[in-house]
Length: 105
Image (cartoon, rainbow, N blue to C red; front, side, top):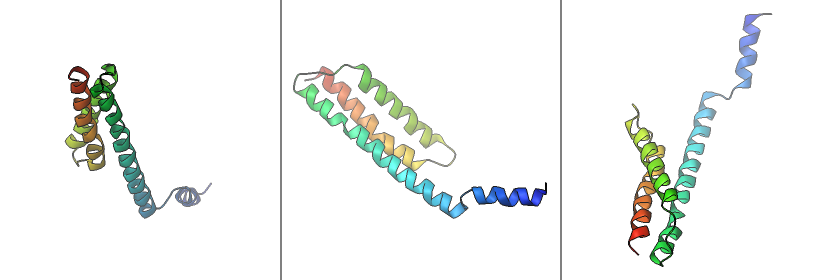
């Protein structure tokens, strides 16, 4: 088997670099939007807490800790991963508010 043929057939299987960058950018934008929407769903939990029906602590606490870890990871990388940071910052703040409203309602 000719190694030159192997290399050219390998190249055809992969997306070219500019297309790959475009796809990664699109996935990054969509994932950021979906993550923010996921955290915004905690607004109903906050409303429930304020109405006198507190939610269990474990879910918002776990969500907040997860958001802190991912936002910190994105921030501390050599090249900051802004979509990761931006998408998890709302989780930190909404987690704090949700936990506070569990006890203050």
